[in-house]
Length: 480
Ligand SMILES: [Zn+2]
Image (tube, rainbow, N blue to C red; front, side):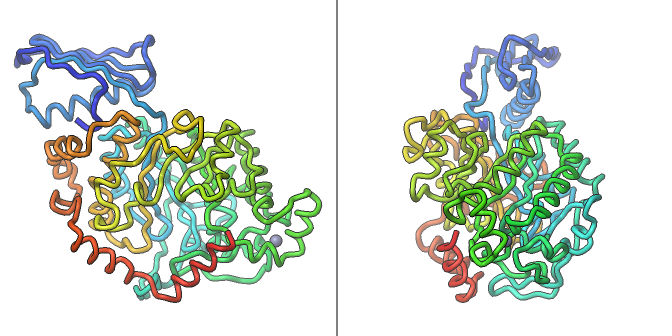
């Protein structure tokens, strides 16, 4: 089974053909905990008052896939090590249909993931019908071409999810105990929004929806009050659609060139006694976070947002890069919480030759660099897929599956995980599931490529980027 249950014991004999099925929700156990008891006469499922029964049924489905209808008698007791077990899909760079997202959600549910981090806004597109600011879906959702690295096409993207479609996704996730966590990335990665509302930037100049990959220099202006009004209204509009507890407000890859040259941003820094542009980002993030908190939400940010050292400790930080100057650790030392999603262990947009299934599985759930509180501050793990170079459902599925399952087990089992070979063996037994749900997963021979294949795949992936783009990214990174 995946994830591997905490306690599993075969008790001898087999279930009879006419065995009865019993289900019960229990109050005395954890909300995600479940128990399964199979005797010759009966299958009994017990689950905590959250999603326990959902997980009991999922495990039973896995057992049936492995053993067929003649299940051996057994006892299972199981609960997750971490409460936040997430998968991420970038729908800004490329749009995926509601049906395709449902397939990805269904499959993730099958491995007991419980959060869907939905990346709906970036430089290259805004993807949700917005009542308060309709230019977002009329202008920010449209780009006339794709010029990502060495890929050149006039096809572009012009689709967005209607409000009904968003509700459909939220409802579908809810069936499996999955909460949708929308992400509106800010103050960087907002070029698409600024294409519709240029008055929110430092220069006020008209920009186009991004058609290239990379790090863009346009940011929301942190000096203008109108920016904060816009963000609050936008969040209100989105909170109508997303009833969950968490809300992601980005904060990654925001080079400070614009802010350093903007009189309004400089004035804001002076008035608020902020020593540098990173602190200005912290200030902006705190204002937006506290608005979300006033609505009962828990804000999440990417790790760059803590670089100013002034972020509210109740803002959850999502780790994807290394902790260069121990700022992430400092945030956690104050009592902050973290979601782990380090690039080399969690990013599925890279070929298997760069991030093998084994690399994914061996995500360290208690990294020493996080400091003394270590594992206590870890809420869970997330696998991600960024889609600049993913233009088809088939490619999306192949890159994500089965790698998403590896992260799912890391989140559920935590530090006490079986060896990778054990995971591989169980995965092989469960592999028919991908066929059942029509997921075009990568075949076993592709999971852990040998050195030569890995080198070829790495070179192929690097070809996606032009050398200018690589230089620009390097330059921008120095200013984050
Ligand atoms: Zn400004």
